[in-house]
Amino acid sequence: MAAVTQKSVLASVPTQLLIGGTWRDASTAATFPVHDPATGSVLVEVADGTVADGTAALDAAVAAQGEWAATPPRERGEILRRAFELVTARTEELALLMTLEMGKPLAESRGEVTYGAEFLRWFSEEAVRIHGRYAVNPAGGSRLLTLQKPVGPTFMVTPWNFPLAMGTRKIGPAVAAGCTMVMKPAGETPLSMLALAAVLEEAGLPPGVLNVITTSSTAEVSEPIIRDPRLRKLTFTGSTAVGKRLVEQSAEQLLRVSMELGGNAPFLVFDDADLDAAVDGAMLAKMRNIGEACTSANRFLVHDSVADDFSARLATRMGALTVGKGTRAGVQVGPLITDEAREGVDELVRDAVDRGARVLTGGEKVAGRGHFYAPTVLADVPAGARVLSEEIFGPVAPVTTFADEADAVRQANATEYGLVAYAYTRDHARVLRLSESLEFGMVGINTGIVSNAAAPFGGVKHSGFGREGGFEGISEYLETTYVSLNP
Image 1: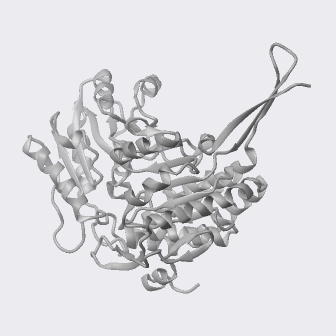
Image 2: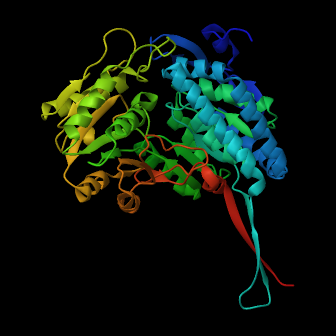
Image 3: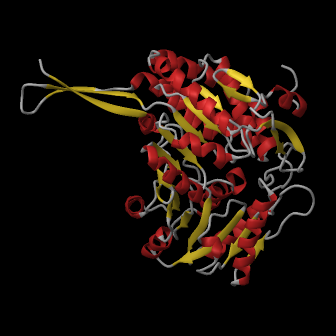
């Protein structure tokens, strides 16, 4: 196999729009740059799609919907299976591309490729398991028949932090269900999606089933698509603020909508926890993806009897991490996505310190090129500090304490968000109580990672609605039709 280099990877990725099976320039021929967050340098220029391009992409999806919906489920599943195999075979190329545009270390990018590919494999198997039912009317006479059909053309908006996996998590079930798609990847990290679209073409996905629009004018291009009466579904992963605006726009056409939005995940450590395991889990829950994840542990709530010990251990581990460009050997923490993002993280740290929090490690921007921030642990974070209520999206771990289980649950639930909560305890009865009392769509017990293609991913409250992954994931792309049969 030829050596995988930055030059070869960037040369191989498409940089045009994909509309109706054709790669083409934007209607104005305009482009916008994709930057390396570790250096600030421009990697490539990609097509800057317009409103007209968005309409053309939806035209193509609508035109392809009927034939695609009639494609045998096995055929749709085999396309996904071939795509899984192709993505897996190209892990090194896709991982390097992801690291270049997003910044995460190569080891993490490889992990995302594996994770993202698994959605293609999972939904390749679900394509042939779309079931209806047949029953006798309880009152006698007629028969009740139900069947499931694809929702139809779907608009997908994905974030910059997991540029491949957030795409496969939406594309997998849509392909399996028989829906066509218009995909709008994040402007900061469009390259992974463009590369994935090329892989799906190679796997045999027919023209027009997946259309990809890259643009620097997301709101301007997206709104006409969402308001178009031909669109039948909207799926979005991103901030709660943007999600609310999209839901408002979607109401005009009463679209089927699924939203995976922000988080403020509590990480509970009880006095009976295995502290070594809890610190290991904390490192995973906090530092996966440089802390730039909606599932990232945002608040560490620790029983007051073990808080000092836990904080010291966590600070030692966080302080030992190697920060640098993600393509360099041994680097464990890459840059944040933009300098604006880094400034936002630093503001949260400064606010906490001004209110009395102690910095055990880090607490500052890293000098030099790139958007780097030192891994940080804050102890004695007081109630009212912004870092406890706002999504951090960076390598900062604020630690506060609780007195007992009721206090822990009260603090954990004291947020408008409800995506995921983590808890470390060896009390099995407590595990059951926490599972029922924590107001979150997902709960991780004695683990720092909950994401799995075979499990339903999603939240409650301001963290959104709908589920991605698991048996539940494909239902988001299916409508139920009931037929009354008179024999």
